[in-house]
Figure (cartoon, helix red, strand yellow):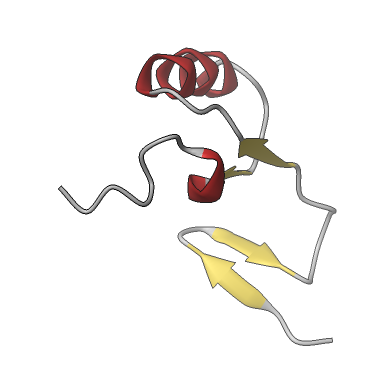
Length: 59
């Protein structure tokens, strides 16, 4: 199996990793969830920008 390293986490070897997605639409929702995740024992966070209400806004 191939591995990938993101910062100090290697996915594909060692213990299973806990990866939590952020899927809120608003900046306030994203910030609130990020603060909660920061206090949790997770290995990686995935920001699903496709859920963000303004992701297609080029301005």
